[in-house]
Length: 200
Ligand SMILES: [Zn+2]
Image (cartoon, rainbow, N blue to C red):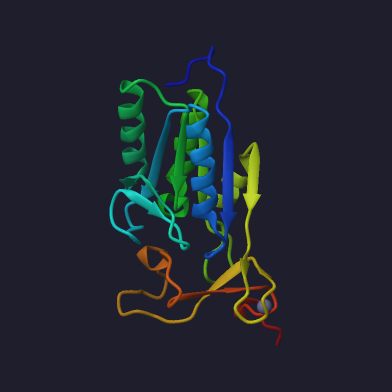
């Protein structure tokens, strides 16, 4: 897929905790590129079914058509389809944390093929640890956007989120579907008010 005569694409990564507006920022950027005439493919992980299949939904109610993908193979298939359908300038990938370590080589293939990549996802887990592969992608990006939420305890900027309620479907080490949005299950926290940083 990589052609040595092709100008590489540009990588932009939007990272942050839950409730930071990452999907909204992705949608804004996708819409701007669309207005400018770019051919855009939007992909979200198939686990994110906040508002049903086929759309990316933000916590504030915005939506945009998106293709559900459960693996990087699905992203590759969407890209191949778009290329066959007339070309592709930008691939936007929401909920990127769910694609795991396979996402970095996938993104690098796209960039090598001259396609811009916009990635949005959680860069921290609910226990305030770096959430692969977002930290690596942020380090390698041309542009990073680090968003914060609002701490539910004090109102300051929140770079973290905490799991505040378990559902029957969650396993103790679950980083899967349970991480998809919803104010009942997670709360934004600043460093002072996240239990991972509690001083003993
Ligand atoms: Zn706080």
